[in-house]
Length: 124
Image (cartoon, rainbow, N blue to C red; front, side):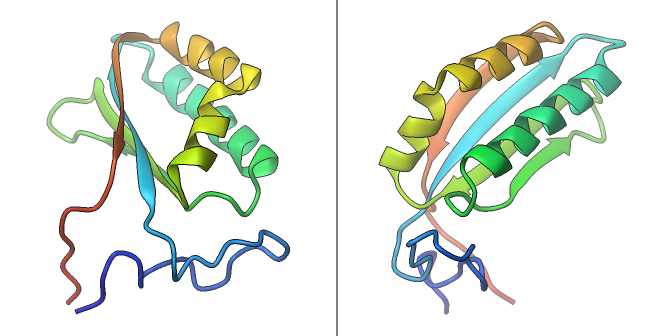
């Protein structure tokens, strides 16, 4: 079985200096309750946030995902991997992070952020 630290991005960004195969990743997770009628604006605003992150933290994070609950279209979960807690903390402490989250909050009734690590994985 492949451990969490062994499954990483196959081609890290050149010059990132991160060996994705030797780091235990941490995950930024957001649980979002979107205001009814704000779904499209929320997704577009989240995408702008993810695009900013991809530029400003190029090569330092894994793929970001935004999932929508099929049974409850106001419920979303976002997550993305980071090579370590320090990099995640730098992202969260940047002024632009706060600005982007502020824009997202205009479209939500609730937001619960979290930091997670892998407890188990299954690889078929």
